[in-house]
View 1 (tube, rainbow, N blue to C red):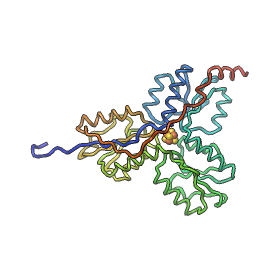
View 2 (cartoon, rainbow, N blue to C red; view 1 turned 45 degrees about the vertical axis):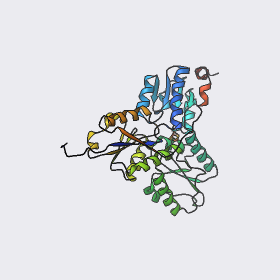
View 3 (spheres, rainbow, N blue to C red; view 1 turned 180 degrees about the vertical axis):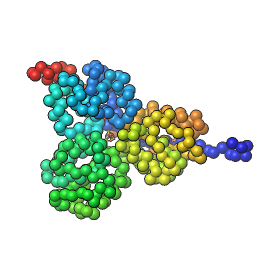
View 4 (tube, helix red, strand yellow; view 1 turned 90 degrees about the horizontal axis):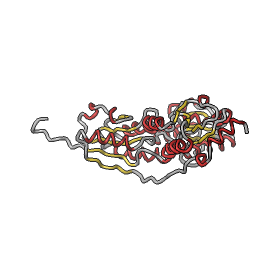
Length: 330
Ligand code: SF4
């Protein structure tokens, strides 16, 4: 830098709220408590939450992550992840004589119950969500004959229903609010009598994190979202940042994934994190930035959050004894 050049002012805009939501907090504590109470191994079907660091940390403490219930030895304890499971998964677990702990987020359970209720009333349910996402697989499993997946606005032309006067839409909890409304708009044009869910399916945490990143987007030359690539709500934050006018936006699991080249010509960096991300990872990013002159941190606050959920009730029982009884066939 020549002597005549003034240093570029550098600052960080830090989104609030960011990071852990109530459902993730509950699920992670549930695994820790299960390990404390029942000892290792506790099996967990699928990543308890979609975050690499969280999964690695729990593995070190004795949790064993599996893809399918069939991989869990008979008579063991298995936990279901925050994303929820289809009823068939509960049946499989019962057949294998497993003691189960259900860490499904109560806000996902709410969508499951809506699906069951509308299916009982013989509605066709248009579930807006991402194909192959665990939550969508779980919700669809509640009423497979009634649910059709709609993966974004461009999918609407393909949707067919039995009776256009009995159609409702529901959604995955972690979608982009704006894109979902676009999909709903297109569905309403096609099915004017489309019924809306009784309350928002996109959860408060997803909405608040998107609102905060929208507020900072236009002022940021670069937005860094801390989160894993399989975390739906984290990926959405990158899209929302770009949509709100951020110069650039990237998703990183850890600070060491940040590329120095992203900082070229950048004076304002926005930082946020997905709902499955522990704060220690954000601290790592803030430290990384501060070592490069981004020491000035301003909070961009979009909402207050105070919601918490009580732990899964199964943690109050003696599951080792229950599993042993199941195996003995008592
Ligand atoms: S993102 Fe929302 S639905 Fe998912 S675990 Fe968190 S609070 Fe529950």
